[in-house]
Image (cartoon, rainbow over all chains, first blue to last red; front, side):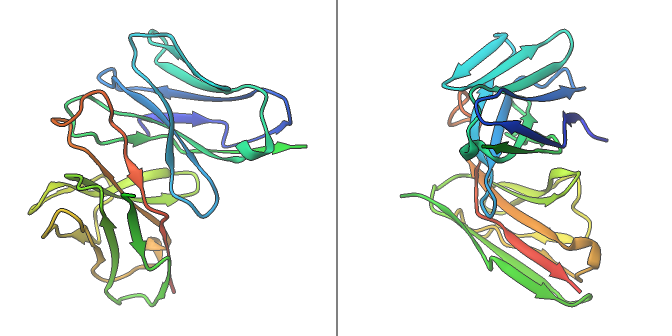
Length: 113
Length: 117
């Protein structure tokens, strides 16, 4: 049972464009939603995270939009660059749940020149 | 600098053999996790530990075991390797929730690519 559904599986964006990756969750107990970025041959690394008490969080070119009523959240990468080409995972966890993360299936992003 | 290292980076084995993947962290984190990464499935939790002598099963634990004899290491053992266990394995660590509520960051190793032939 996939508790966090992520789409699309792959994405090609032109340099300077906006990359958008969407996630939806089922467990209403989830209260922390991180995004991890993974480059080829490397392990995932935390990129940005949000708690459901805010609808948006921005860090540089990366923004998380959160819709609690729809149980959806998305990652927007503004002015996408070739260096952003990586696999992105959304995740969710429950505070008090031992810091166990439930990951989405991942999105392979390629930013073309 | 603190880090988390996995070894070997690549491993080829035969079905039925026992295989152990090493994970060593110098963060002094209580929490350690093992995941497998497969296309279309993302990262799935195999086993995890909240401290020495503590181990717990994740969602895909069948055929795997772990032991935690010290804070730094959480080796993952495949008791009898199967072709379905061909995957990329990641180890991660984090502070315990008692130490920090504000950050639930997991730090990942670079992974071990395992092929079972």
